Each structure stands twice: as C-alpha cells, then as structure tokens.
Length: 331
Image 1 (cartoon, rainbow, N blue to C red):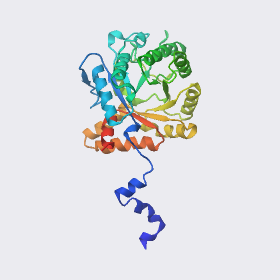
Image 2: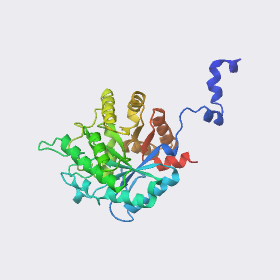
Image 3: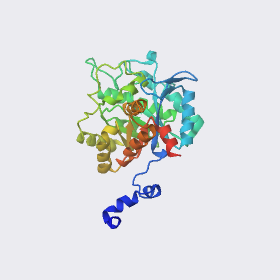
Image 4: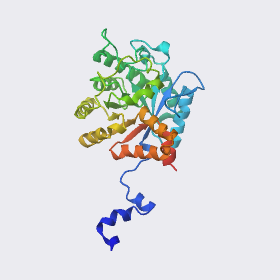
C-alpha cells in the first residue's frame, strides 16, 4: 500500500532521469551566462592571475578570441574589465576618457570581428584608472565626492558607447549617476545602449582577487564603505534599486552573489525587472580552492551554484566559470 499514498508522489517523480527533467522547475542554459574578461596591454599576452586559478588577463587579440569562443558556446554577453598600466593611472582617473584606452580598443576590436553576434558589457567606475584605487574622485580629506565623480562617469560611459559598447554597467555606487548617464546617452544618439546598474553592490570581503586582476588591490587605501552597501542591510538595497530604475536603468545587478541570494529574490519579487547577479572573484576562488583540496567536484559545484542564482529569480549570472559551465550545459 505504500506506493499508493499521495505523499509518495514526489518520490515517484524523482525515480528516473527523464522524470526529473520533466518536472524540473528551474532551467539553466548557456544563454543565462555573462563571461567577465580582463584586458591587458600588449599582443599575444596571456597572464594567469594567481588569486583566480584558471583565469587570465588577455591582450586585445586574445579577448577577441574569447569573444568568438563565447559565441560558439552560446554565451550572449562578455563583460570587460581593464588592467590599466600604472603610468596611466592618476588621481583624477583621466585615462577613463581616452578614446584609445585599453577598454575602448578592446570594444572596437570585438565589434570589428564579431559585430552584433555578441553583446559587450563595459564597467563604468574609476578604480581601474585611479592611482588610489577608489571608484571616484577624492577631496582633500580623502573622501570620495559624489557629484564630481558622476561627471567623470558620464564622460567615461559616453567614451565606451562611442567605441561600440552595448551595455553600460556603472559599478561605482554614486548617487544620481544612472539618470546622468541615461540623459547623456540619449543626447549623444546612443538610445539603444542599455544600462545594467550595479544597484545593490555591497562592501564585501569577496572582491580581493578581482582587485588583483585589475591592478587596484595594492593601491587601495582604506575601504569603500562610504559608498558601497552595508552587508547587514536589505531595505536599503530595495531603495537603491528603486532609485536606479526610476532614473532609467534597464536592468539591475546584485553583487556579490551567493551570500546575497535573498536580496536578488526580494528585488525580483518587488520590482519584476531583469535582475542579474555577479558570482564574484572570491566566490569563484572558494570553489577552485575546494576543488584543489579534494573537497568537491568542480562540475557539480559550478552548476549547482549557478542554478541557485536562477532559482532565486536572476535573469542571468556574471561568472568566471561561464565558459566551463557552458561546455557542461551544452553537453
């Protein structure tokens, strides 16, 4: 009689692979992934990043090849982050406005080779360009000033849009920058360039390897707690998202990812918009450390964590495991 009880229904649906597939609630595909890539100067350059095992900085020619690889894997978007040389960094981050800077050269090269076969998402913040490693301009007291920084970010966004960026992703967390960038894009004729706002970006301990990758880790003095969010707060994240949507963001991002899945779910439930999460460098590094220690299987850990983002309500995930995950998903 056991098999006839209604409460055995769930066990029956789990009994075979085809049945589990039939009843699966959440689907993960390569189209859900965004692949973050680090750009460096030179030609034919691949620089492995010690704190991100398996991840490298690539010169522009290598980045173009990674874009082609993403297309072949069905990954719809790559996200670019520059490793700016020390002699091009300054207190005011002026290199961000150079139309021939590393980021703009990479954008143009990708678009020349790949056109609209892939989307290019570009980071808007000053930390890859400042000598002090902060995301904005500093006053004499060492405090990041908002309005002056926003003016710099607007010019940076326009510079990237004119190079061919498809999605502008401000990661700086300055107030009012989404409205200012949206207006500048509209006035500059870039009406179809999207804005994916880092709306809920927390002052997290999980960013260390990323700062090594873009060369700002050793430069940063102090922290970013005056403009990034307190990890203890949820309602503040919802207010930040509401502001950015009202100012013209097309989608929003929660960063980091795994420790903030509750935030992603709250944002999705309350606003019903496209929510993206960033599985950040520290999260990637933890998986790789677990694998290296024999504490877990890489394939299983990667797919399970990415599925968690989708189950939480995310439309997509930025992850350094994107190419590996896509290969697994594509069979």
